[in-house]
Length: 505
Ligand code: FAD
Figure (cartoon, rainbow, N blue to C red):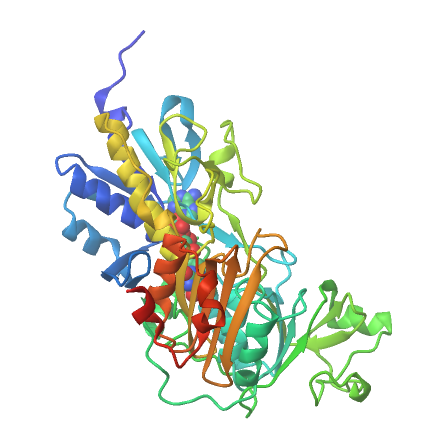
């Protein structure tokens, strides 16, 4: 047999990372630092990568950082041993330790980390009037459609829907949610009630500053990226993704949101199909919750949404903000990965998938270890960074034959964000997730100012929602981590006249 020509052999790397989002970039950076004499290959379909800058650990588990979209050569300059290949991976041959890119190039790895993120789970595929928002390209597409729209329908009740309904002006918004209260992923009905008045209030200027992750991508950069690379899978947007973007429709209005709760989309009609159906659509309700005032709509719309409640609304387009699906597809063919319930690559406590030498981090993975009682996986920016970092640590330890301890960040779920221009801190089992009925809630609320909720079980604090400038996050973080018995403090725990820090510091 003829010997293989050396020029044709696939390049080999000790470490290959797939995906230029926060998880992949963080993983590559840490590997590059730990193995300065090895080349780290970062293979990504997006032309820009996401870099974490100004990272600050603000408390034991809460962190603050900025996120910048950068050209890949900036990363290569910062880490001369990182080599970025801009091409999507179309196939994984795990038995041969090989990936094959869209450009047809093969790369051999010793250890591979898959960080290809996730994509929006659309209510229907292939309908040009249904948009999902995931990356800079889809945000630019949404902005373009919105500028001409008089009415849109937003479907979904997670973070993206919450941010959109608050940000959009100059356009009527029908917001269809399957839950009873808004923001169900993050809040219970009490917190939702606290937030609702903000939907009809005039937005304050300037906006409050907020300790949280910040995402920077100038509006112009978003347009450039959309124009230069149509059809490519970009990284997910993130915190503050809407800042610098103009979310203004074609009408002269500020907020105009109508919430349709406890319903899902039953059917979507295009204009002609709707006319043939002889069904009736409703005008934008003038008063929230006043069903008696429902009027027939005289206007013709490009698309109509029929809800399971039986109501039909016409609109210019629909935003599907109903969660994400991990981008596992290119890696499955011929590889027997164990998948999590939500379709992500199942990873153990070392971020290792079910296949040898393949790790995964960020939105693409589903954690399958027994978590700490106050941590849960959520597909969030902070967790993408933490997992990318920890996956690199595990890959390094495995390579060097060293033991690894579970990272402290997985001890307590901690997330800082901003909804409706309020600072929002979520800690532990903030919505009593999985706690059954033997838990108690304690509340403190000052309308328009702050909302504090703690979740207690057997006298111990297991979670908290803090909305507004409460300054309680560090104290509550410690109380949840320490699992101190707080029974004797009773209601004093939330009494605003008592400086709670003095009790516990
Ligand atoms: P991604 O950032 O999606 O990166 C995946 C990378 O893989 C990309 O570079 C992509 O190009 C590349 N890729 C994909 N397929 C392939 C392939 N086959 N071959 C090679 N490369 C590939 N989180 C928060 O914490 N707070 C928020 O307020 C928040 N708001 C959000 C708002 C929006 C609109 C969206 C979409 C997300 C938001 N998130 C938020 C979620 C957060 O952005 C994600 O959890 C996080 O970015 C995931 O990072 P990742 O690195 O796992 O994936």
